[in-house]
Image (cartoon, rainbow, N blue to C red; front, side, top):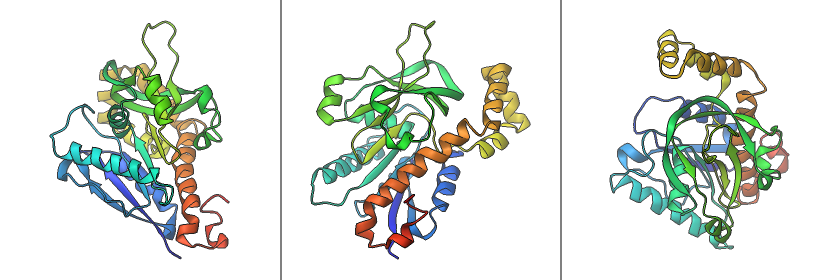
Amino acid sequence: METARLAILDMYEGLPNQGMRCIKEILSQFGDVVEWEVFDVRSLAEVPDLSFDIYISTGGPGNPTDGDGVWDVKYYKWLDAVWQWNQNPENSRKHVFLICHSFQMACLHFGLASISRRKSVSFGTFICHITEEGHDEPLFDGLENPFYVADFRDFQVTQPDEARFEDMGAKIIALEKQRPHIALERALMAVRFSEEIFGVQFHPEADSEGMLKHFLDPERSRKITLEHSEEKYLEMIEHLKDPGKIGLTHDIILPLFLRRALGALSGKLTASSSQLAGVYGY
């Protein structure tokens, strides 16, 4: 059977991370249905062309407003090219999932909102609230409201431009946790840019088992406790042990995105319904 081609845009700038491992493990669930290739965007200024069917653009370190004038220019040209491609009804759709750093860059590039540094670093597991517009979001099917996310960031997306959202047809799907005792605007946590392009501030690829092993390392445990408090560390560990929290988010959002993208591509890929069963969620 013909397979879908998927590009991973690696935004980690060569730094060790858990995100790439988690994304590849999720992709392994789709067996022979997806073939994928990694592009090192920030270290090698690599971006994929439009021959791919599906794109996953990862999280990454640093300020999303900074670039070197090379990789960031190429990245935005790729994003624009995908957007323009999808505007032509005669073209088969290109599906894009944007994570954390990539999500911030896309919000900035499309003029949807502002980017600013948080007053304190977000590190750990937190609740995330689905907005009214997000109640019918298919990628959240099976999640409670609020639901739990893995959230690690120095920056935030705030001050949405309502007129620009309306002009693009984009929707704010989720917001960060409510903090009534703090007079700060709640950051955007998920945006549906279009039928084919979806982005989140958090890390839906994060897996409980892998994160638990990672953060139980004695040296990491000591460092996190010193930087974020023992209370925050123990709360995160407790959440990671609960399958109804981060584990549920991991099992639903990105796999649903892939199933829906593959389902939309099924005619193009000329796969039989029996071959799609189980993989596409039919």
